[in-house]
Length: 336
Image 1 (tube, one colour):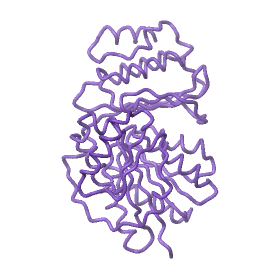
Image 2: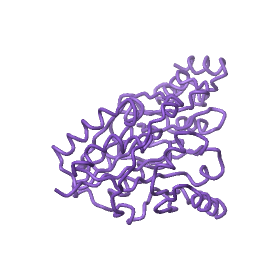
Image 3: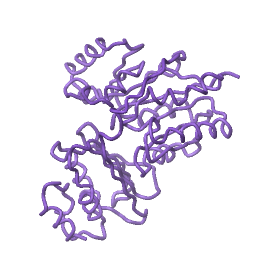
Image 4: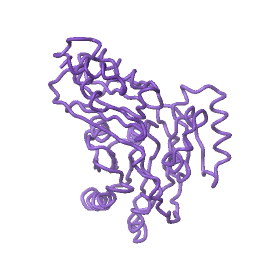
């Protein structure tokens, strides 16, 4: 039996992994037997439903409630077994959570490499070009793990980067050791076609480092019934404010039923993004912050609730709450 190629598309929070997978599916066509395995670190699933809404006939499998490289590792093999038994795909795309370590994911898949069932294609890591060269992101262990363990490095969101930033990215990438098989620059998650055609790799076993795990972050996620309609302008203002450095929000992503239709709202790399989505189930969102910062998720939840169009008592409730401000929390609670 010809081994089934497995493509791991990794990258830090907000790097554009879901967008890249959607583009691959669009170019390859959903008629082929492609299976997508999505891992959500939090308990609220987002990326899987987004992919499924745009490719309704696609086989999606989700692993939620933990990183597949640590707490949800056993679930990975169980899901893979079901994919192989029920779908028999031509290709498997794996989207790990934004804080997963690809090397340990490969270790979990290794038993299925030995019997010839699967083969690992070069791991692809997406990064934000500006963040890669202008911040101290590489000092963050999880970020560095992802970059160093990948064979292919792709700078995404290059439409937002100036020529100097792109030049600095390529220079920094050329100094990485071991050297990458390929380095690319792109926008909107569009991976070069040749990435999926690269030959299989024979990965060396990694030694798990317990000091580098998801404990560096904390997350919160919530859902609302689909009939609840949110005020788009207030919700967008809240997400824009969450992009500010003083909030310490590392990543925010949500799909909401708003008075302007269903929208996907994101904070990635300190930037706010908004676009329509075909997703039509319950509204849901997830926020992630570094554990060392005192992000007040409870107050944030109240602020989002206050953006419901049936509860528009005060526009001040839509401001992103300041974790250090008791006054903000009182105002938001009063808006209920």
